[in-house]
Each structure stands twice: as C-alpha cells, then as structure tokens.
Image (cartoon, rainbow, N blue to C red; front, side):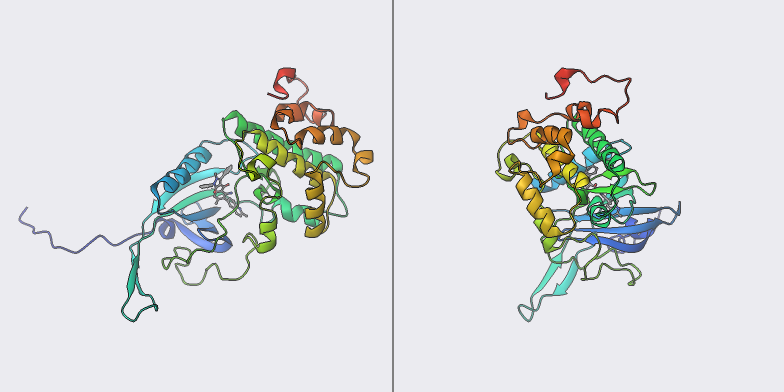
Length: 329
Ligand SMILES: Cc1ccc2cc(-c3c(C)ccc(C(=O)c4c(-c5ccccc5)n(C)n(-c5ccccc5)c4=O)c3N)ccc2n1
C-alpha cells in the first residue's frame, strides 16, 4: 500500500477494431463513413464493418444512435444481419495546418463501428445491369416477394426504410435477398487523420473508386426511387416505401441496359407512363403498379395488399389469407 502511483499520463488508446479484426479490403467510402471487409481474429469469420464519424452536434449524434438501436433489434431473413456496434474515441491528432505557419489544430473525433453480416459484392443495382439479356420472370418475382417481406417486417416494427433502391438491396452469400442501408454519406468530409482502417499500413481505402463508393452518376439515383412527398419535404408515412417498391418491381420485370435508359424509364414511371409494351406484357402488374406509384399515399397498397395482388398471390403461403382491410391501411 506504500506504492506511489507513478503518473504515467492517460492510458494508451487501444482500438477494439484493430484488436479484434484484420481488415481485408475496402468495400466503400464516403464523407463520414467507410466500410471494410474484415476477418475476426477469434472466430475467423469475415464480416462487414461500417465506421461512421459521429457528427459534432448532440442532436445529430442522437439520431445516428437511434438508427443503430433500431437496426440492432431487426431480425428477419431478408434484412442484413446485425452483430455488434461500439464507439471509439481515438486520441486527438495534432497536425500543422498549412494555412498559417504556426497554426496547429487538434482533431478529436468519435467513431461508431457497426459489425454486420458480409454480403456478396454486387448489389441488386449491379445484378440488374448484369442480367439484362436473360432474366427469368419467376426468379425476379420471387426476389421481389422477398424484398416485400423484408419491408413488411420493417413496417410491422413501426419503422420506415425511407431509402429503398437497388443499391440498398444486397444478397447474402447463399443468394438470399438482404435489404439494408448500404449507403455512406457522400459529401467528402475531410478524411480523419486517425484511420483505424489501415493498421498495418497496407489495407487502406484509396482515393480511387471502390465498388460501393457513390459516384456522381450514383448520385443521380439518390432521389430517383424516392416518393414525391419525401422529395417535396411533405409529411410522410410508411407508404413512401411502397412507392419505391413499385419502381423496383418495374426494374425487375423490365430490363434496362444503361443508366440513361434507367433514368428515362423511371422518370416516366413517376408520371405513370409505362414503357412501350409493358402493359401488354404485364397487364396485372400494371394494375398493381398504378396503385403503388400513386401520388396519393393512401391509394398505395400496404405490403399485405401487394402480396395479396394477383401477380404475387401465387408466391404466398396459401394457408394464410390476408384480410381485405389490411390491403391499404
Ligand atoms: C459486400 C458488402 C458491402 C457493404 C456492406 C455493408 C453492410 C452494413 C454495415 C457494415 C453496417 C450497417 C449497414 C446497414 O444496413 C445500416 C442500416 C440498416 C437499415 C435497414 C435495415 C438494416 C440495417 N442502418 C439503419 N444504418 C445506419 C446506421 C446509423 C445511421 C444511419 C444508418 C446502417 O448503416 C450495412 N448494410 C453490411 C454488409 C455489406 N456487405
């Protein structure tokens, strides 16, 4: 007890990310986020870890934490699987900022890490581009049914996805559809000096394009699938997801080979103008889509109404009858 504590300064910072995981490759980067494929050093499994630089404002920070608490509770075969989340506060970095000769600035940043199931490298966006010539309508409707089931689960939790689009729909290693929010904030904020993603100095998110990095063209898609009420800043509800599902259904049924064609067809669909020949080929789907793409959210069906519709009815578990009053409420 006579020991005198020797002041050794603050404890050395130990990054949980660097301790528990070996980075394998960068999967995407944005202004405030990075995603890496990692190998867990203990269980030897590969995961995806998203690092989000927490905003400075307390309100914005609480919003991010609400998102994490909500996603952590989701448990559905068609929603990307959550494993763990934690926060790291690396020591502030002192560096000379060249603006003035003696100016130095410390960077104290907080990072949120989210560990999720690793999906296949291509999203539905890439899948749609790669499967233009041969596309089996039974398979695509089956895929759509899985997406609808996932959205139905989200709605039954009292949540709204708000950003359904092909680049937010991935595939599990076994091929099952997985919805999530695979995006990263795109405004390129100043890269934090502390970058836990490059511990050995050899696995970094280079400045170059990475498969999931959002490009300018990708920005074109940012609002393409968004409901009118969201774009116009009006109050909205879960029916915003139904609008996005309508546009996704058309893209699954009607192959679009270029980004230009995609933007043109979807822009027309937003005015309820279908591509030449679509209504003749898919008359029942067109009836459903006219409701899903209605400007009036109340006219759009619920996910129950979608699953009970003629084009999708055959894909349902026939023992479960969906009551009529749930088709639109
Ligand atoms: C090949 C590949 C590439 C990127 C991946 C990213 C992820 C991923 C990671 C690592 C972390 C989170 C998500 C994700 O879907 C998110 C989700 C989410 C959304 C819907 C369902 C499930 C999760 N949310 C809410 N948020 C979020 C968190 C804080 C603030 C704002 C958004 C997400 O980041 C997410 N999709 C998982 C697997 C990946 N696989």
